[in-house]
Amino acid sequence: MRILIAFVVIAIAGATFSPGYSFAAEEQEQVQQSRVALDELLDTVSRNSGEQFLVHANVRPDVVVGPMRTRDVSLTTLHTVLRNNGLAAVRAEGVISIIPVATVRQNPLRVVTADDDSIPADEWVLRSVRTKNGPPMQLVALMRPLVPQAGHLVAHASSSTLTIVAPYGVATHVVRLVEEMDRHSTAQE
Image (cartoon, rainbow, N blue to C red; front, side, top):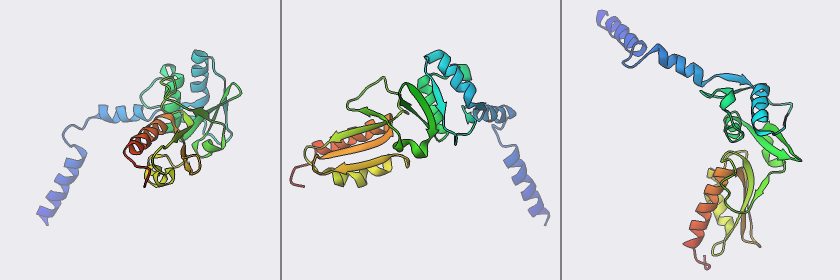
C-alpha cells in the first residue's frame, strides 16, 4: 500500500512540477488568450485604414486577439483575427460587414480571377479555375477537404470550371493544385 501511495504522490508531483514548468508560461498562455472588445478593435483599424465597419447582430462583442496589442492590428491582420474567432469580413458598398463565418457564402464576396498579393490570405473570396484536360466534377471530391466547412466548392461541367468560396489563401492553394493535376491529366479520362 505504501508503494502505491508513494507512486501516486510522485506521479502527481511530476505532473504538477514537471521540468520546464513555470508560472511565466501560465501568464503567457493567459496573454495569448486575451479578449478585447470588438468595437475597440474595429475603431483602431478604422482609424488606421479609413474603413467603416458594420457588425452583424449575432456577433459576440469581444474577440480573442492572442498576444497582439489592439493598436498593432492592421486590416490584413483583422481578417486573421476574425477567422480565428469564427467571423468574416465582407465588403459591400464601401462598408465592411463583420458577420458569422457560417453565413459568409450568402454575401457578395470579392471575385478573384488571378493571383493578387494585395488580398489578405484570410479574406473570403469567390474564385474559379477552368480545367483543360480533365472533368472538374472529379476534382470536387478531391479538393473538398481543403475548403473550410463554411466554404463552397462546385463544378460546372459544360464550362469545365471549378468554383471555390474560401479564404483567399485556401482558394489560391486549391487553384494551384487543380492546375497541377490538370497539367498531368489527359482529355481521355
